[in-house]
Length: 279
Picture 1 (cartoon, rainbow, N blue to C red):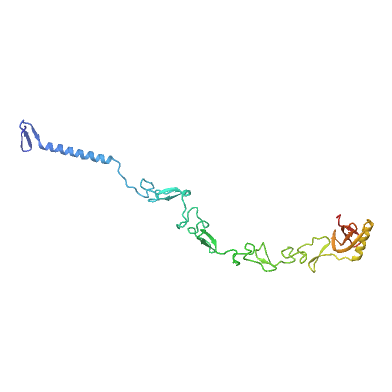
Picture 2 (cartoon, rainbow, N blue to C red):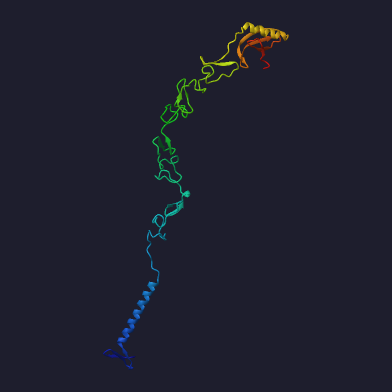
């Protein structure tokens, strides 16, 4: 066993070895200081934990499009749903959530996409913006007309609906248009005569056959002579009226011959026979 004793700042052992207490203190303090320095260097060399800052234009691990839209914004074709960017096409629209989403419109979800006109209202059954005016209710509303809504906007007697103006108008004889309710018997100025021998009587506005001085008796005589020359016997001959042939008036004669056939001929003012069976 080694016994120690000291005098002042020197420590002696029973073997005679001496130790300087100050030197020992300095050594201990040096070791402690070295440990502190090494610890500090280790801490400084380790990457520091940095706080995530919203707004630094970096979408960091704990940030999402929901918590920090400045850093984690979605593309134009995407939307943020539950913190994730998804394509709009994959989103399921919810009619009635108060948001007019992509794919919704006035005709598919008027609850979200409000009706923009005062003349329409939202039908909550069909989810469409529909006109307040009901076609077929018998009432001609301001926005209805006789052409597009004939059930509600009916024209009075003697009137017709103009396709150009879409209003009820009366025909005007003399405007060179053969309009509804006009014909060859009430406005030949507009509705031209079409039958041969007819002309437009501008006083009566009727298409008429030119008058003939040839009497019915003479017409029957000419017709009878015509058939006798052909060796045919006319059992019955009668004048049925005046017609036209090559813009010339002719009297129409009905002839029943012996064989039982009925033939028609026209007799001109000069007595010429027109065989209507061959013309």
